[in-house]
View (cartoon, rainbow, N blue to C red):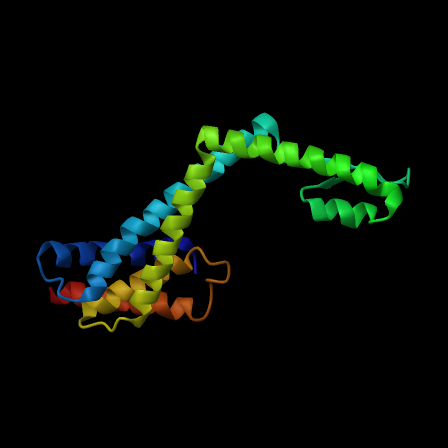
Length: 196
């Protein structure tokens, strides 16, 4: 199934649910959850994009925190480590490598401290925290919507709209049961729209 019918089903559901909500017919708790979902999900997506943009800019400016670990084999180039345990794994824990491991770990800690300071200064740390909070709220709404029984056809549509929109982001969203959910969403939306 291509993306056009998917987006069309979601858009049709949104129009119907917005209309039901504006007319004051939103007695089904799933419609309120859907409204909260739309705002929270959109916010989560914006915050994710902002955090990614800030991280990309910071990485371009100072690079990610890492150190090059020279290996004894001259045929092998150095390897990059981003964590102290990687340094130990690459060099081993023999006494002969102790001083090199200590130096590399100090260098890595300094690079991480610089990254952390710059991330805070440019707002990346805050953006990641806001994104995490929005993601937690998205998860809460998903759980609540899946457990809340629909009291009306618009409530069913709200539940399916949430599931369908969330499924668009899942890597395995194509196929079963998503095609059925999308179909049910489109059918219920069309039936309800013709009755109102």
